[in-house]
Image (cartoon, rainbow, N blue to C red; front, side, top):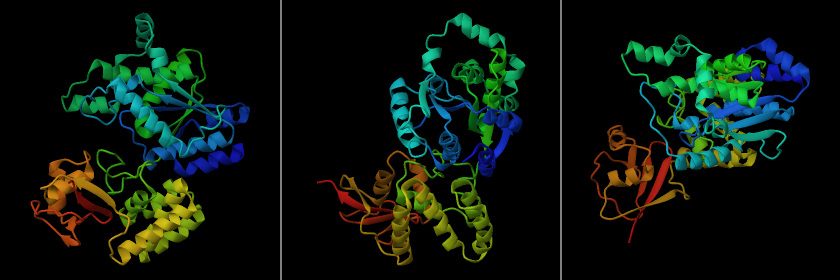
Length: 396
């Protein structure tokens, strides 16, 4: 891919560029660019929404540019208040280290980690752990309270008469200063991070650097068709999900999202997607399977995608119990509620599980069940929703 084509290529998933002329100038310079990719490791989950940014950075890597993978191990202890009406809980350092390793493994599905000339891993504890108080106060003296408080989520809290804590106001300053330390030329982010990265441009200019170019990427609704993808809402397709889970989760999206997901989460040519738009109205199921196959193929390869489509069609079209379903072990005596609870681990609360029964989403041996106290026997088959199957084994 040449320099001219990459701007056209990334436009498919780009929301805004600050600024396009600066990006053209950077690409024209011919030097290797430093692309900041900063993450706070609050939870070790990357989903295909995050991967939109990763795939864009991978295109720059393929042109010889370097991604600086910044682990916000220091800033994770504060927590970015983006989109939150309350202060984030403090995460222990041990959990931060564990989450970091999981993040890197998931990012390897997209980014190139095999060449140190194309990827550099940094942690912002390198500079913030040893920053003198005087230097921190100097950073704070460069920015006004009015500027910090103008952030949209802070304005919402003020309107709702909710507290804003000092460390939350400081967070954008710290993220902005990361760009100075790393000498970032470019960063690719979701629009919710724009305030912080614009502050990065501000600080770079204060320190005599050229301001980084910021590319914000498009955000789609999650698989429920409502809020953006989130682990807490369960409406996401995770990079760590198995090929089967990815396929099944795509099959659960509303028909109205098929074309949008094809544009943002696959590399199917736009000309082909234009033709598919008509087919979605007449035969949405086949086009949804096509989408699911393309998403699985992107992360796991064409052969795996073919196998998962075969499995899906065999299982759900013929309505048979799959032969390779996951087994869960529960202690007897138990009931169907406890078995469903065990199948989700800590992902769902008791009230969320009760709602599944109320909605008729739980089947026992292919019979819908609403009685949460119904006894479970060894070998019983649970089905939750359209695609989650479990065989129950009683612990001896």
